[in-house]
Amino acid sequence: MKPTLKCLPLVLLLCTTQISLAQKSNESFYAFNADWSAASSIDECTYFMQEIKKSDTEYVCRYYQKLGPMIKQEVYKDAALSIPNGLFCWYNKKGKMDSCGWVANFKKDRYWYYFLGDSTKYTYYEKYDNGKLLKKETFQQAVSDTTGGHEIAVTQKEAVFKKGANDWTNYISKNLKVPDRFTSIVGRGKYTVTVCFTISTEGKTQDVYLFNSLEWSADAVIFDLIEQSPHWQPALQNGEPVKYVQKQNLVMVIN
Image (cartoon, rainbow, N blue to C red; front, side, top):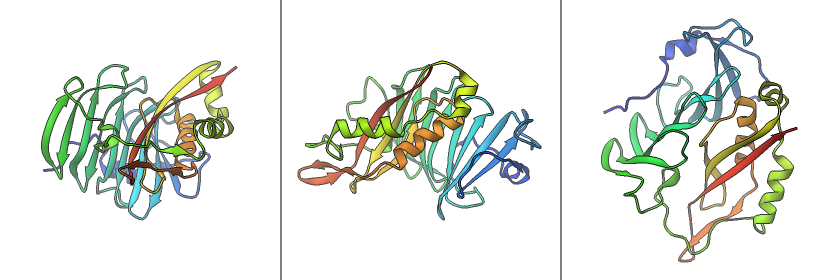
């Protein structure tokens, strides 16, 4: 049975006008009016969608308020955006995580989390296997760490960036830049984002998502910061590499 996914009809994606934003070769942007009809330009739109081609079998679509936080993220297996397959996330009007979960070829899979208010702790979660619901637990009931869609074993040695925490701090300080677009939209202040990502058994960062979204250009810097990170030393369990989930607070300061 297909899950109920909060996604736009494909026809809207096909009829939109491609818009011009600072973009990379693997990115496309589409503009929408308030009623989700095609907008003629970025200046006139209410929402826009950023499509990122990660590979021939992974297309990430992120929908944004024109001058505000993310609305939702969808991942598809094909260029036509017809096969949901990956991590789906939805955000409230303030950009706080509302819910997120994994889809495998149309079917709910792995973990689905549901949040309340501005908390980064889920109120309850569901575990699926290829569309079949296996269990449902509240945050208080859950005893295992299931962050990021994986049931993570207690590790004997956690993942380490290069030579340790100082190297990770230095990497963040060097590469976390405040984009001009974000500065012009929000003005002075201190803005914190909580980002979650998995470190693979090869030490590669993957499955990156935000607990709270700031705005497109600021989010893009954070996604790039984590996704382009040099490899980590993977976590070890009984001497063997295991997946490891890292949660990180990042702060953008505008003076």
